[in-house]
Length: 283
Length: 249
Image (cartoon, rainbow over all chains, first blue to last red; front, side, top):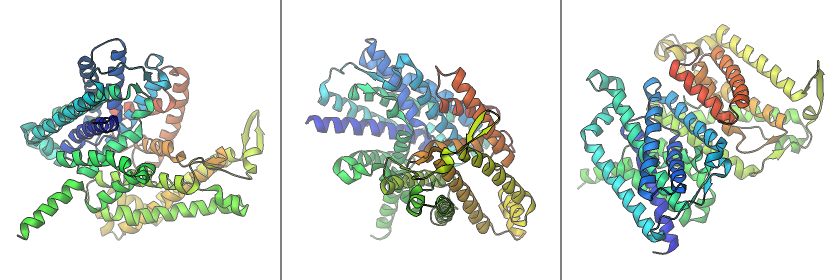
């Protein structure tokens, strides 16, 4: 594995974990979040700060996930008060609050972020494999979660919250759980990112990043684990493969959101399901 | 419709080409209004049957695409007006120096919002408009055409956004592709804060948010930046009043 491939694998793995973590909140449980990058950032900052103090890699990753998950549950509390568009605006606001806070903190490096993050000790290739294993673990966890009892309940909440409440589902508890799990995994991705980049800047976790993560989820198919995983890989590789795609990256993301929602709201997964169903109908 | 107001900005290139600020301004407003209608027709109307999530994602897509399109067409560094006399001419109002654009903004906001309020409360179209928001089915059975109402909404909403964009361009004497970004987020925050559909709530919310941001930026300067203070305030208010300041719960 060359250094280039190793870095590509790391980025793909991190993006995949991010997309799958948002998929748990937005896909499984139906709670829109436009500020997911904030939790990615919380995890990254927590891990980076601790790593500079000499804390070991596994502990910093765990601390980043725990910190992001804790804040995620607090932010999740807002989802108990507001829904749909209002929740979208609220979570978007969380992203700005996080950025505005971090930028003003001298102990977190302010605008310059945190640099000089220690080496992972695994080497570029070893670390890429580590990230890939972590991404695979998140895929397996997502698949398990989706078919578990909790996954069914998430589905019920996403489908019709009031109906779920009527049949005795404690929707508040499940929404908070979804936020907790999803944001903790995003924080974990943030921790993985710092040992890869070795420097973090506030702008890495801005609104555009939140939208990029959301685009992967929507294009892959909101709620589909495989769809989201494939979309995360494809959308990370796209700017690498084609120079034009890298120049017009945002334009392509925006156009994808419009086209996918217009013609296949179920995303790639919806298309695949349609294709398979057609093939079964015409043997 | 979430995030419905498009982010078209008037481009000073028309003004620079023709040498007429007025022509550029009017054209910008017209282009915005027509673009709003086109966006409704081709992007939102086909999605009417879907859940609110779908049009919301589309609105984000449109936002990104327009911003990138402006960057590609007009360049990333923006354009300044060649000749903007309203920017340089100032008036002294009892010790406060204001330039013509600032005065025009205050007057435009007052006139447009008053006219808007009168239109919504007094004219047939305005009443049909509000009826459609409250209960689309009932409004339809009373002869209001909801499709026409929506077109009208997008026309007016986009025209107002175009006027605002033109004025901001004149005020800064400069326009650039991302100038609509933060404004759009803030506008969304303000209508949510005021309570969706309430013009009075929107007015109060924009005033309150402006004051909170300004004072917050002084007293909390070491902890948060201006935007964070605004959104923090929004979140706190929504936790207490999820329907917004004057929204109906």
